[in-house]
Length: 253
Image (cartoon, rainbow, N blue to C red; front, side):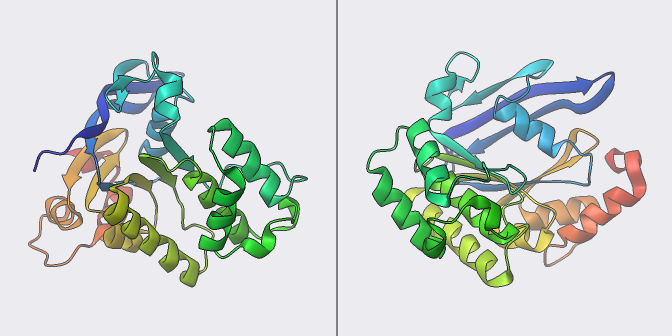
């Protein structure tokens, strides 16, 4: 099945002070896919996400989102995507509602109050509406970040460790919501995580990185079989990542 490409990455490279963080990486993500970008620590996941978001520039290669060069069509492109990470902070003295209102204005969201109200209910944090961020738990802050990520009804959603601080019940709720949104709105998600069981449950496809290179790309079971070189019947991405972390640069051989 040929899917419209929402994200096209062609030969991107990034080095920091002579150290290669991302080495000639290319991949495409089609509309409606939920894709896991995974690998051991230092594999290049965060650097790739930061380049997609325009926070840092690649030394070489090109990134196109919605068919547009992100450097020439920045406002148009970034108005149609959103990003969430539990490691991105909010102004602590502002309330939950004030923070979300600021982001809603940045995204030119109409009916801001209604949409924020609906999202707070959706993530079961309506009671936190008027509380300053400084008094929230890490899990509650994560839920606020998820509300922010859905404010503009994005076509492309980039999630960096979205379940990191959530309790098991909230994590199940968020996972089911993402699957429902994919069914209803054909939303596209790029998801980074160290929780391989959640990646296996959520993602149609996995892009596996090691030392800045893509070493496998396919369904969770396809990546498992390729890296472990075994005819497994169920995915075992945790074993895959542990293997890469244990054998270092030989993983690409």
